[in-house]
Image 1 (cartoon, rainbow, N blue to C red):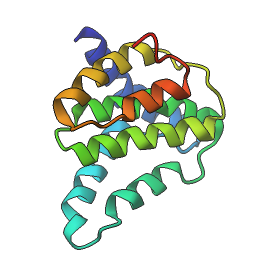
Image 2: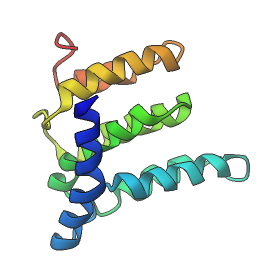
Image 3: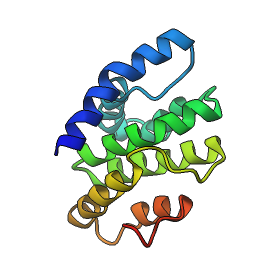
Image 4: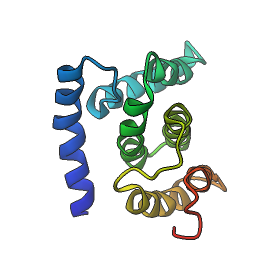
Length: 143
């Protein structure tokens, strides 16, 4: 749990500061948490609301910013109690990985995937999102 608390502190405070300093578009967990919640609420009126959220998150994102956003969006996935929201966060992590164009593991990835694997088992019926992320980073045998 100490890792999750540390990650939350980093995501809430350092990423917005870094983004402001460099003027880059970066995944900001607090802002994205609220936007995702709003998108989930809007699903009845707009079936594309969550997809729109994901599209907006990757807009004008460079490879370095995408790489730095992978673990924070996985931390957001860990908070989800809705399987669709969980899958959407994991899918966004894969989109970030694709934009980053690397299989290099971001710091904290293995520990996060181990937590997500347990969360995924409890939350979903046979989802394989965590496995897909682990496959991208070539760490399926570690988690």
